[in-house]
Image (cartoon, rainbow, N blue to C red; front, top):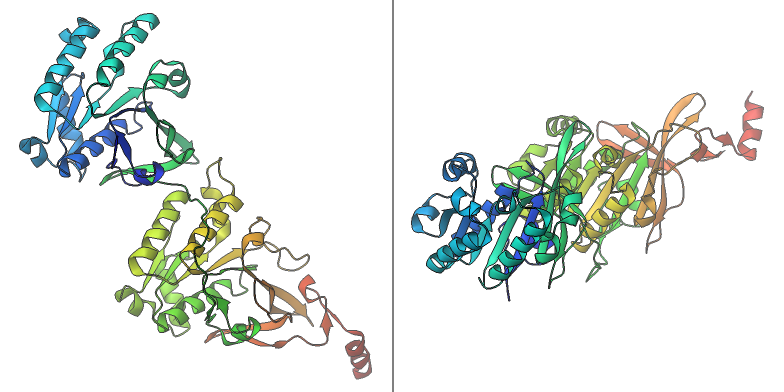
Length: 480
């Protein structure tokens, strides 16, 4: 057996390398899920790599229909048809009516002539229409016995719901099953791909989101945590002088930093100062912004005397505004962008917005833990911001369950002192490093975020309503 590429973007990763040849793989799903696009992309990609491919269909006027719909995709190269690397083989309805022997004979006659490396039968259900359950089973037995001798990768498409697929004899005759679904999600539908079976090889099961784009079918594999092979002991400046002091010289390279606080406390500004500091040190960065679109972020940074476009033009920074993305498409986009610009730093601004993008089978802590660990393996130093709902009162870090797997946690807070709302910052934890445990004042001005001296003379600062210490209260009493 030989492992061959699937030709479908993202699927090789799900299958740990690709399809096995020879084998028979069923691509199943209901109408409109993208099965034909999937298999056509597979054979045209294979034909581009000099494989000989055969496309078999029993639908009426198939060639005209295929050319009409498939020509809209970039993978559909008609020159491969003229070259002979892709051959269309329609099976006449008269042959289907003659039964399994006639169908198999016609298939093998064409295989003998074409000698294909990869065969698509689209759809396989057509050959068994009109047969009762017993005769369907017998047809598929005969058909698959013949397929085993073709020495090809055979991709079958089939119209199946999950319930019908389980009951079908095809499910245990084929070597592999890929199920594609199209499921409602708020005001849109999302496609999912699920590898249910693949004999003789490892694969990543469960649902992976996918899309049909102009380049064809794209799969966005779920993230999987892997152990870091190396850790760097160097420090990375936070981009804010006072925060460097509070963190004993900055963040550890490759660490994950959570900045949590209510609206207006300075989370985004701290994050962008961190990114800008990296750019000035020739460390490319990525900003994933749920809070501000690209233009708004550019304008906001100009207010603090920073020109983001200068670095964008040098391809040193990329801004991702992901509100239309699926969460796994977003993760894929982040990783691809990091590789493309060789990024060293990342700002993920607005973790809370992810909740509305998560499918029912994924929990926010699980997704974030996989994303955080994935970036750690790349030694990306990343800041994640999270907005808390409480302005004052009981302190809550996130309320989402993500703080335990963050290396560093920084809390921004409003405090009311003498009828004035002021901002405070505290470093709650830093793995593997000493840090300042004092609560310091934060000022946001035309230069950005500045961190000043600790609040003195007050206790209960993190409650939002501090009180004077006994000594300060004594002094205040004598001032009156």
